[in-house]
Each structure stands twice: as structure tokens, then as C-alpha cells.
Image 1 (cartoon, rainbow, N blue to C red):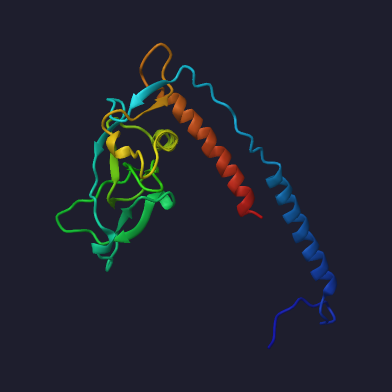
Image 2 (cartoon, helix red, strand yellow):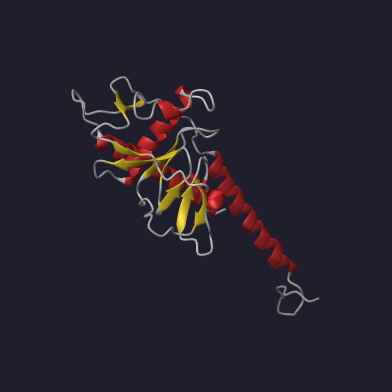
Length: 220
């Protein structure tokens, strides 16, 4: 077996070059790890005293569609083009890709899904591709033309409230989703209007911070 190695002008293996090269690699990696360790992971408290509670079906928020309630076992995946969203807390809730069903239009990218029960009750995601849903997963269709960042913020608030207030297999969201499920959102001062600009600014800052942190890892 032969392997390529650097050589000097005398065609001998250049151990000095290899030593210097590896020292540079180690210094670069150590520098990157130092930057990663310096990342401030301290949570910042947000003043929510002026926020107000909204029902999920408020005029400023969503229409609630009860979803497809499909059984994954009965679906095919010979030419999968449609995401299948189940009661999962990872991968945006997408558990598989399936074939499009003739006569049944999938839900559109940009709409949100919410798991009403099961171990991952409250899992809420903005879907990035067209999709079908499993049982106990509803679809939230924005009534207003809101941005991706704004949807992400609301999905997080829904998840937090769902996990805090309800319990899987005991008191799930099924009975509350269209009646008394509500959560806090920031509002414009002295109004009941959701402060969309504030939400966008907060999420933009978070996104920028996350991208900076990820770049440190990818460049190691």
C-alpha cells in the first residue's frame, strides 16, 4: 500500500513540514474552541408585565384546521414528495415523506402544525414544505400576512404554554384548543394589538446570534 507524503528537495519525507503544518492546525482549532467557550449562554429575562393573553383563534392569529388524521402505516412512499408531520419534537415534526394522495391537496408550506397530545404535546412548528398530518396534529393557518420570524416566535410561545399547562395522557390540548387555550404575546402600548414589529426585531437578533455561534462550530 502506498500513501502520498510531502518530501523535501532531497526527495526525503519532510517531517519538519508535517510538524509545522499540524502545529498550525492545533493552534487554529484551539483558537476556535476558545471562541466557542467564550459564548455567553446566560439567559436574559424579558419583561412580560405588559403582555396580554390571546386565544389561538384570535382575529390576529389563526384559523384552526383539525388536520388529516392520516395513519402513516396506510400511506405509500414509492415517489415521496410530501412531508408527513406527526407528534414529534424533532425535525420540525416531520416523521417521513410520503406520496401525494390523488384528490387530497396537502397543506401549504408556511402553515404551522401543533401536536395536541402524546409525549410531545405542544410541539409547534412552521412547516417549510407542503405536508399531510397524522392523528392529533392540527394545522394553524395565519389570518394575517405574518413573517416567518413572527410565526417562529408564536410557535415557541404556544409550545411553552402547552408544556407548562397541560399533561400528556392526562389533560391534553384536544379539549382546550378551540375553547380556552391562550398564551401571552407582546402588544403595542395601550392597545390590544400584537406588537409584530417588536417580535420581528427580537427574532432577528436571536437569528443573528445563532448564526454567529454556528459559524464558530462549522469553521473548527
